[in-house]
Image (cartoon, one colour):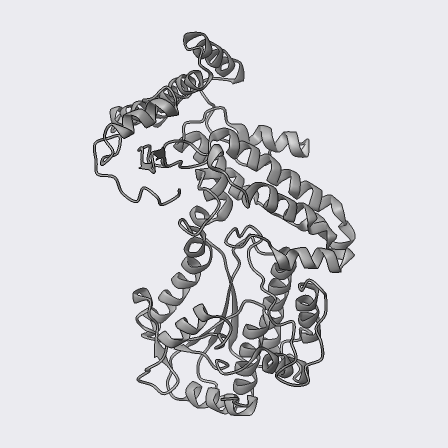
Length: 485
């Protein structure tokens, strides 16, 4: 069923006036969410002032690892939405949401060592996209009793999206359905353009001026530049293809083998070739087999076996340090690429994230080498601008000596490294206890370090694990042994 724009506008007005529930419009800056918001905006603007009885919140979640071109487009759009709404006397409020620090991509990948996301360990979506928006929607709905979430979802985009749309059927209110997330039990879902095709969306955008002042033709150009052949034919009938299938998202995404949209942007526009270092970093360091770069223990220090091999866990200290250096190098290259385009303002990783990575490495992991400032200085040739940490008990000379002694005690290289890390981590726990003037759980932390580094090498750990295949190394039943395999 092909509902016209005027019919949708009338429907929006009827639903808007039917109750006092606030509205939340999901906005990604793409064609569907733009068309959806434009319809909502037009419908409300056509109402008499006395009938504009409630706010419309426009939320956009910036994962902080979005395609920089799209991220800049969305940020500019949100600014213009706020300005235009005030000028037009509309209570439309834009919100740029970002993940909490502990949920950010680099904090988890480089800080904690989570492997790049994969089908069996897709840790990114909830942390980067869902958590921030869910928190906002939950707080707003609970403070107002209920809320309506407006989504620019369409049927026919994919089988997965159609299944989501099917979940929203069977509403107790004609066009609204309860959200399936139990955390959002007070939220109703409204998808106004669910019956539109991609071509219908473009037809609407190209024939109706954008009410908050962005150029929809420029949006069309972004999609056009993100297709491999850079062609978006004029749509003459339903058999004519359009460029509406371009997909934008996180440039770090490893759920797909290639970032085709960024690759096409670089290929089609020489003014976007400054993104090449970003694409190179993603292809070289994230979309690759990485088992050899991961610890033979899981994140919690336990051992798990799958098909007679240990399930490797987080990235090793050396690989995390390498990833950070390569990421900062890519950031330097981007900033120096084309300053006329404003690339000196591009930030792939923030100082706040670097500070949190530094804290995790030193305080949580006991890696008192404190490598973050040195890596930063090596790349940018300037002093690290982040906050200071407590002075470590050993300087680099002391640690080098400790490493040398470990190699003399055990001539097998992997075993020597494990001995060094054991000793270093015990010293780190002792130092933290002294600094905090607290002895509570001190022995437990020391015991935890001893358990973690209980094996000279991976072969010994595997032999031990195979001797008790139904249990972890601490005697507890194994759980989810293929979670990150």
